[in-house]
Image (cartoon, rainbow over all chains, first blue to last red; front, side, top):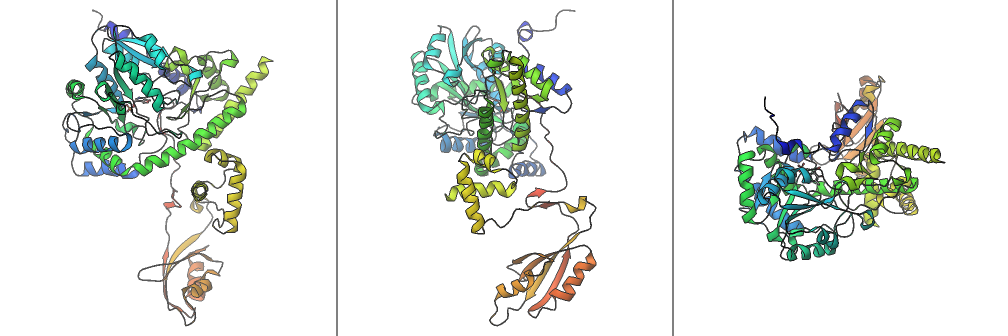
Length: 391
Length: 163
Ligand SMILES: Cc1ncc(COP(=O)(O)O)c(C=O)c1O
């Protein structure tokens, strides 16, 4: 028999989270701070709309790009929140999560050998999606001393004549870093100067905590024509299982993305789309409530790190913290494994999000305050133990 | 400070057991501020007590609760408030609400048995001068109370690790 597999696919590393997950799930009664999704249920009125749409027999395909009503609401929402102006008719496609949007954006823009700048630590799918689209990933290593923000200089240093796309993964998973408006403006200059395109993954745009609210990259002068804005309902409205997101951008690119979407997916889940209309029409208060809860937990977790002397910059976005464990002289993997064995607490090694995550852990605060407290008590025990051993 | 009060109240309404220090961290203010606000709100009787939500059904200890619709005639020189006071002074009475609609007060009464509650209604409540009529509704099962679903404890059903 011939080899049935594609070399490209076989060459892609399986996700580091997956590996660790298998170990964690063997461990009985482990508690986890390892999830990347909200602990809240989808607000009831949104679920109710989903149920209602099923009762009404709305069980057919929608048009490829999504329900018109939903696209109109997305367009209104993006304008209201981020001052973005997208024509619902040609500049928005509703996708199966932000995940699909990332994939089809890469595929619509890349030719073999085109380079994609991927700042890391960052979400696990940018790199494989680049490779699957025959692009060449070029990693930019973000630094703790910059609070894991991307600088103009870092982008310039990575640019070659083959560079085509810059991924902007902010607010960031796993670091919780955000880009301020002025940081983005500096990036926009480089993008303009070198004629780049941007995939701006703003899936956590609703979850920012500082004084400065989220700036959408495409809202900067001249950037709309160069940017695919990716967002969705998973994080903002606690709707991960509904599998619903969207991509917005200039028609030139969107038309081609829609072509891939049309052949590979047909349309995003109909029930989810009806529910999402309600999420955008009536969900602002829920989003605000969840944000406030995350913010309180964020402060609590940071306070605990401070008490136990774990260095951690103040993350202002998403629901992750990214403390540094370099003092213990272990790799992130070793630390996470030892913590799991010793205290039965699961956290994600920073390296799951890129090699430069070495020396860090991703600790999620998408958990109740009580759960966080229990888990952090155990982490504190572990840290104290390690420091004693060192002496 | 109104905003801070609302934040404190919203939080402790769901979780009154959190300690002061943690509450201060979560709200992002210093402990003294929270302590002062709490003390003041207790003094102003905004915070009227700290209670525990118990599902007695699960304990095997007998308890019945009835919701009693009460119609009254306010007596001369004695508004609804006076009548309410007559009613709420009985320790058996758990709550008294003045209600809009077809009756005047909603009174909840707790007792050990149906008999005990019925007896209270017939011996104490109905004979009150201003009470015109009562209608007793026994609670058969509590599904949700104070915003909390009693039946099941919510489990975290998420995968242990996700990207
Ligand atoms: C940064 C980032 N982008 C995109 C996604 C994909 O989310 P979804 O496909 O549920 O919209 C995630 C999920 O964890 C994420 O963290």
